[in-house]
Length: 315
Ligand code: NAD
Image 1: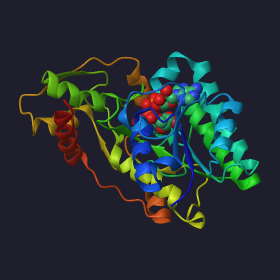
Image 2 (image 1 turned 180 degrees about the horizontal axis):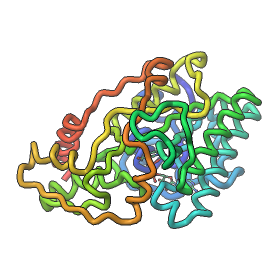
Image 3 (image 1 turned 180 degrees about the vertical axis):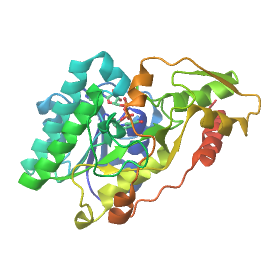
Image 4 (image 1 turned 30 degrees about the vertical axis):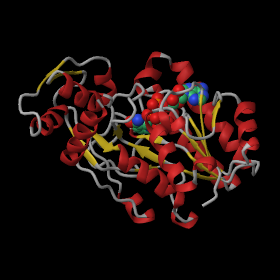
């Protein structure tokens, strides 16, 4: 496959693993990684890398033209907890970067866009259990507001200009290769590090906070899966609900105790508790499963086993 791809925000939690996988599939030279800062991670030493600011249209456009890019994966964003601390940057980065790539596609310079949305598009008035694809959406965070607006713009550009933009509402993502970048579900990564280092963890959410989560391997599979699906099968042009598992901090602790019996957890909720309280507990993703064949692989225990094994080997 010779498709030429640009990943913007490639050095983050998702972008690092996405770059690696896309290079395996499409060939190293066909996949250009870019970020506002360079990363020491080995994947970025192996192929083309450009430093660009996703908020600067000329910088994005120049790299797209230089490498004759056909598909863009836009991963640069300010995440939920960080955007609450810097609302104007959260809004500007999350919206301007999206407009830049949507406009490049509108002009026919690029052919296809992947843009990630989030469960943060939902809010306190959304049904919490089995949240459906179409439902009340009144996000109460800067991040959620930017993601919901982004979804509306994606659908608008598809309807008005035929822009082939595809999107997933990621749940909290758990991975071992790269640390998360300031989200409300970051505890579910940190807990594995602390379990191995100290056998103990203090969680910034309370024990009963149930949130939708997914292991990174499944998230990468979904991301590439939706981009490779035939155009006709992508019927939702805002963003698809996507789900694998839901658990509370107490349940992930129990899962870890199956492998580290002496592991202990305690709780010190902070400002992220309010963000978590506004999000769904579980997601109904039957539309994604029906439209483009989405299927997850990992549940809580298989993810715990994979996380602990991989983190042990990483040391
Ligand atoms: P991250 O914070 O780990 O990575 C974002 C990357 O963007 C970083 O490498 C950062 O340096 C880069 N960046 C920041 N500002 C930039 C700019 N101006 N120009 C270019 N690059 C810039 O985020 P992530 O977890 O990899 O998330 C990627 C996308 O997925 C985001 O849109 C995020 O909202 C979405 N998402 C992530 C999760 C999750 O659990 N990780 C859940 C839901 C949605």
